[in-house]
Image (tube, rainbow, N blue to C red; front, side, top):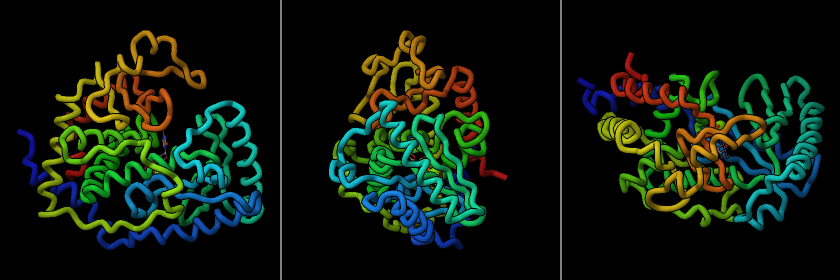
Length: 333
Ligand code: CTP
Ligand code: MG
C-alpha cells in the first residue's frame, strides 16, 4: 500500500524545514550581481546584465544554488521577443566576448576559479568564488531570461506550486536523474517544464503563450516572491506529488506525446516530426538526439530538452517515478 497523501506531504515538507530559518530574499545575490556588472562594464559599458535561472523562476534564492547571468545589448533588450541566433558565427562572437570577460574576472578576482566552456550548445563562463555564490555567465541570449520569466509567470499564478517544483528538483538530483549529477539526463529546467505541463493538463494553471514574454518587460534582478510554508502540514502538496507521479507513470503518453508549453492542449511527436526516423539521423555536437521522452523548449526551435533520455534512461526514470511514491520523493527517512 502506498503511503497516504498526508504522509507524503508531511515528509516532503520536513525535507525543506531548513528553509524556514534561511533568508531566501533575492537581495542575497545582489552582491554577486554587482560584481558581474562591474566586470561586464569593463568589457563593454553598454551591455546590460540579467539574472535568470532558479532565482528568477522561484523569486527566492536557496543557499548553495548557483546563479545564472546573461549580458545583453540594448538591441537584445529592445527586441525582447526576438529569436536568439543559433549560428556558429553567433556562437563564435559570444565566445569572444566571454573570453574578454573571463580575463577581467580573473584579473580582479584572482583567487576565483574561472572556466570558459565552449563545447556546450551555449558558450558560458563558469565562476566559482570558493565561498558564497557560484555563477554562470552567457551573452546575447534572451531565451534563458524569457523561459525563466515564463516559468515564473506560471508559478505566480499559484505560488505554492513552487513546492512541487522544488520537491521534484530535489528528488531528481538525489535519484541521479538530474543532468547536474553524473549519469543524469534531464536538467532542472526540464523538470520545471514537466511540472508546469502537468499542472496545465490538470487545469491548475492557465495557459500563457510563450510569445507574450518580452525581455523588455522583465526586471534585470528578479523581485522577491515570499515562500510560505506548505499549507496544512503539506496535505495538498502530498496530493499533488502523488498525482504528479500518477500523471507521468500512467497518463502521459510518452510514446506519442510531447511535454510542451508552446501551445495549449496536446502536442504530438508526429506534429514536431520527432519520430523514429528523425531520431536515427539527428545529431547535436556529434551526440545522438533521443525522442524517447520529449520536452519541447518553448523558445528554442526544434529543441528537445529531453534529448539525452536514452531508452535505458527512460526505464531508469520510470523505475524512479514508481519508487518515488513509497519514498515520498526520496524524503522519507
Ligand atoms: N536553461 C535553458 N535551456 C536548458 C537548460 C537551462 O534555457 N536546456 C536555462 C533556463 O533559463 C533555466 C536556467 O538555464 O532557468 C538554469 O537552468 P538549471 O540550472 O537547469 O535550472 P535551475 O532552476 O537554476 O535549477 P538548479 O537549482 O538545479 O540550478
Ligand atoms: Mg541554476
